[in-house]
Amino acid sequence: MEQRPYCGSGGGSRGEVTQLASSTKTSQDGFTNTSRLLWGIATTSSTIHALMHALWLGGVIAIGALVAPAVAHILQEPPPRLDPELLKVTLTAGVIGQALRHFQFVCVVAGVLMLAADLVDVALTDGARRKLITFVRGAVDVALLVSALYLGAVLTPRMDIFLGQRNMGLFDELHRQYENIVIYFQTPLLIVSPLLTAMRDARPRGK
Image 1: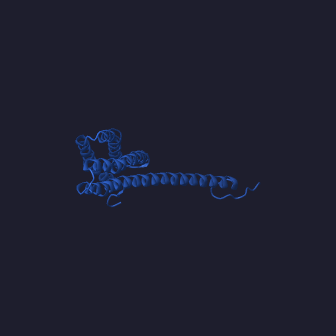
Image 2: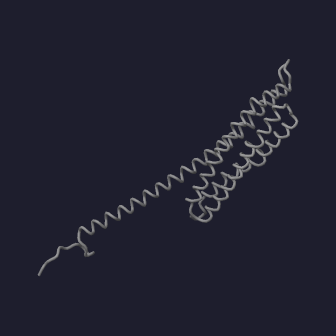
Image 3: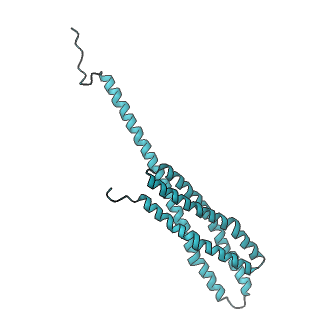
């Protein structure tokens, strides 16, 4: 009677067992690598969104709290023997105008990157509640981007035209519109956006 070698309770050969273990390890390694890749993408998108948001909000604070008050102080107490109107045009065009043009470009780039991060987060976020909050944050970022495009492509060029014509009345009116959009529209949205991120990432009680 032929005697078969003992291969354990599974009844398969040693080669089959080794092959099965190898394929299982490969499958587990592949799953781990995929999870690490997705985690890396999610972390990168969240970091980009946070940095762009900080850059945007910091620029608003810097221009509103530092640049504009400094120019206003100089215009209130102009140096002697200088034409106040010429000084206002020069400072407005050279300081505030350049700062706003560069800042609007930064805002548009930041808005595009924030929106791209939102799309990645929506695709990778699990759970209906977390997806909904991420979607709402994306809508907030769309509104920010649209307002930045309006300020940079429509309002600022018109301000430059009136400034070049030395029509300070119309320039001041458009400048007030610019300030109102930044203060009463963009700033609240910039405050809401990180609050939505905190709500999304917060764990429910008891979990």
